[in-house]
Amino acid sequence: MNKSKVEKINFYSDVLGKEMSMLVYLPECYNSLTPLPVLYFLHGRSGSENVVFEMDINTKADRMIKDGEIKPMIIACPRIENSRGLNSSLICKEVPDHGDNNGIINLGMYEDYFMKEIIPLTDKTFNTIKDREGRYIGGVSAGGYVALHNTFRHQHMFSKVGGHMPALELELEDEDKPYYKDMGVWEKYDPIYIASNKNISSDIDVYLDAGDKDEGRFYEGCSILHEILKEKGVDSQNHIFPGNHSVAYIQSNIEKYLKFYGC
Image (cartoon, rainbow, N blue to C red; front, side):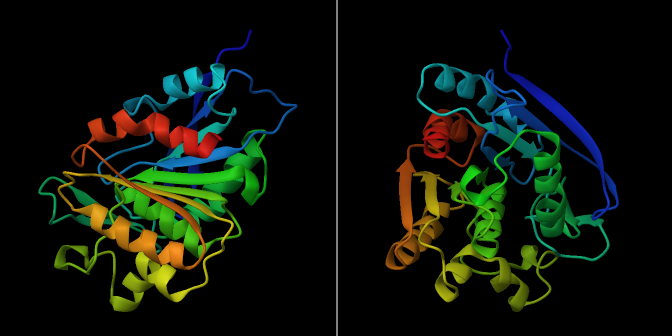
């Protein structure tokens, strides 16, 4: 019998002009005959594609699929670096992250990288359902912000989106300036602004959550976004679970997330 596996895909990104990679979870039942839905699961600011192991996503998905709690699916975890998934610079470059003394900010065409390279590469390499009904996206912290703006800006591409302790900031801070040259760029990608000012398809399912002790108080942004979406007739759910803004918080709730995507 086949076992589930996690494959590492290394590739050269023409959009970013450098080597990148992603980890892809293939369930036990994966084969070349039956196309499966794909969950794109995005890491946070200081994370990487290794989020699949750090959050124990693969073993939890194995168990839940085996027990019939969720349907089989492919889970792709691409490297998005500390980019916020933005098209922030025509030339890919690194600048100091003043909000993190040891960190860097990655500027480049990261929205194009995800939409024009990651998704087509996944669909080409694996036996996927190649339409929005079989394509979901979620992420943690900064990755949750990326998942939300990608979905709201490309609604024809995704049917489910999850923001898990998503970095929904309520105003533009000075340390954010490298990403956003002006307020127009901030508004272009801010999920709350997009939801307030654009039509959001009512057939997108949204899942928001944050810890009750989240240091970034991201539960506030989740609550605001949730109310906007509900007013627009979008099937949105918003949860506050116990915990801080941490890996432990995500690990303790990953089964809830998988159930949302996999049911």
